[in-house]
Image (spheres, protein in one colour):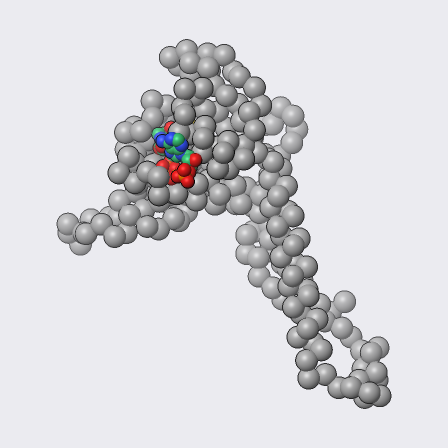
Length: 221
Ligand code: ACO
């Protein structure tokens, strides 16, 4: 199973998966709008192990998460939104939805500095509510009466993404710790070592986090 970014060419298969699993369906151009406006945020789960029927037989999309940034947030806080999530029945309870959601949340934080992620879920959707509340730690932010076309209420849920900032800080301090051990090893000792104390020191800094690159370079400072 492969989890990767959604490509515009996946859209017909995603639309088919959506129609099979959910009553909330969208025009092709709405998927395209997500893919072109926020290309970092939507992911697909692809069954790469499925035997090919012909050389042109594309691997099957068995799940997707369609996500965006809220364009005009009412609270003025930069945040992401899960438009739609589903996994084919044949591939459920394998952890795919959880992985798709976590990938999208991380991309919202790293690419757009999203402070939280929001979504709507039917009050009767036991499986999805369990995924959001128990597995992923979303909090119920209130009920929106008659939100769905058939009149069912929605729970409006959200999850704070601050934990990703804390994780990044922890990673950085671990890497800095490793860096200082590395410099001590094999260094000169005694007066020769002290002579170098005033010399330029190197520290590791993280660059490109906003782009999700997360590479390390050495800078003086
Ligand atoms: N009953 C209870 N809890 C469940 C169920 C279920 N049927 N399915 C998943 N969960 C919970 C469990 O806590 C599970 O952890 P566990 O397997 O360790 O017990 C956890 O979610 C993670 O499960 P995943 O395997 O990652 O979930 P899966 O890949 O099966 O997909 C999903 C879950 C997306 C809800 C799937 O059942 C589905 O596609 N349903 C139909 C479409 C749908 O309801 N989509 C969400 C609509 S809301 C929206 O789109 C914003």
